[in-house]
View 1 (tube, rainbow, N blue to C red):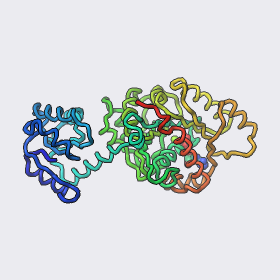
View 2 (spheres, rainbow, N blue to C red):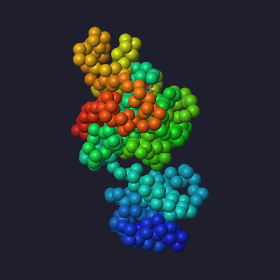
View 3 (cartoon, rainbow, N blue to C red):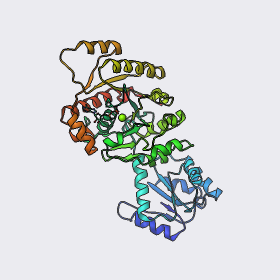
View 4 (cartoon, rainbow, N blue to C red):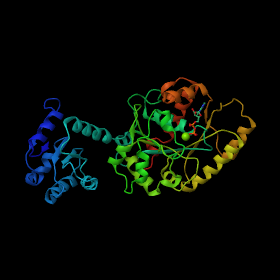
Amino acid sequence: MLVSESETVAQVVASAFPAGQNNEISENAGSFKALNGTARNLAFKHDLVIFEIDPCDAGEVLAVKDLLTHRQDDTLFVALTQNDVSISVARELRKIGIDEVLPLSIDEDGLKAAVAEKISSRSLPQGYIQNGPSALGTVIPVAKSRGGIGASTVAVNLASSLAGGKGSFLRKKAKSRVALLDFDLQFGNANVFLDLEDNGGCLQLIENQEEPDDHFLTSILQNHTLGMDVLCAPAPLVPLQSIRPGLIEGMLDLLQRRYDYVVIDLPCAVVEWVEPIFKRANQLALVTDTTVPCVRQTRRLIDFYREANVALPVEVVVNRERKTMIKPAHVREAEKVLETKLKHWLPDNPKIARNAVDLGRPIVDMKPHSDLGKALTKLAASMSEGTRPATRKTA
Ligand SMILES: Nc1ncnc2c1ncn2[C@@H]1O[C@H](COP(=O)(O)OP(=O)(O)O)[C@@H](O)[C@H]1O
Ligand SMILES: [Mg+2]
């Protein structure tokens, strides 16, 4: 549905969505104000409503606001407005429920791309489809007992496997929506494992004084070809305390509604803003080895994280070691200290690990049938099993 008086706009819309190709366009000259009460019934019958709006026209803004408070279905509302409209005015328009605000000068390709992006960011997570809007995405932080132990390797492969690409334990159809956040602010390198460059998103997030909204998150997350959306750690060095705890809360609120899984690569250091992450975490992956200092540090971290979330299930992942038939004394000792059986073991395979970094591809995608690939896939399957929708937190 098009609501505009401009001939140019009509032409752009007609070329972006040619009639006949699954499109049927109804044109309504004028404004929502003029359409009066009929606007509502008309608008909601369409998949997409494109309309021109002058943010200074209070009456028209009110008419649109009124219309949008009654929306119950998934009609997409896209506003076209003056090219020089400020970010804060655009934000105000989004606040009343308009899905996208675009400049009047946009061309057909721009319009088509903006609508396609909006539709894809709106497609609902599996959990939502299966359990309704109350099912929130699962938050899985990945922590480590020391730097270089393999936490990013685990986070990247976990995210990729959960997303359901090649080397996934999931059946083809059961793809999940996955976000991977690299919050290892100073040493984050998840992007290297995925051949992505920092797009400055994390820095923007840190510097942004306002609460992030859906639109902002879409702009800072990068779509990876394997089906996950990635927030890279900032390329420039930033202080560890840069993130406000409130920011994490607002961000996770949005992400948990949008994704089935939110995998978070954490820094080694314990900082204030990790608390809200642990408050929402459904499961923690803690990567370590079985040496005495690392086991001790693992114990201390578990105790600390459980202060924020007493019932937090912790999966200790032993990296670069192979499980043996007979448990050596040091492993028995580690299990005693950690008060858990060590179930997840990832073999040391420097050749494949190196190759994966060089190519910027997750091991579960590149070498799913290698010992390391299989172990990583098994880990993802087990973690996803542990957070099946029935056991998920609800809103
Ligand atoms: N199981 C493994 N076998 C061999 N090399 C590994 C293994 N896991 C990780 N690595 C390598 O160890 C290095 C550090 O891993 P990384 O995931 O960046 O650690 P962290 O994020 O804990 O600092 C990387 O070069 C990675 O490829
Ligand atoms: Mg890392």
